[in-house]
Length: 168
Image (cartoon, rainbow, N blue to C red; front, side, top):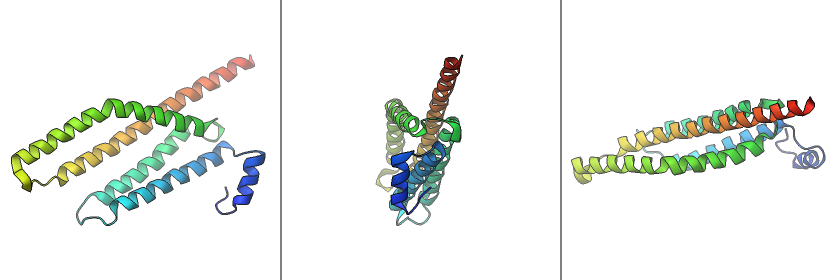
């Protein structure tokens, strides 16, 4: 992998391209780095006693481990078309999850906030509900990675069985 010498990387890309292991390495580092930057922007500055830093650490770990899980489900370095499978299946699975889960999450959080304000008025402390929703969203994102990995594995197994049947 090249981290500084862009000319050499461009030469490799133009000639033989990257193998699956190198492609995965670049992708993993890219998504984790983007997540670290994103989380840093969200929590800076953090309120004392908030769960922001813990949630951000969870988010970074979920992105890193979820991406590795998907790579593992694809067959690691002997797998094929990881980035194509990862990006396309992630998009479709995420859209489907948003359609099916956004409304229930919105309803539950609206009811929780409404109840809290009904009971406590304008002095309601919403930090506990905010933290609970943040943790539930972490679980939801991890679940999305699980679903993507499962789909990638099914595609990898289909591709493997098709290639074996053409050899016969």
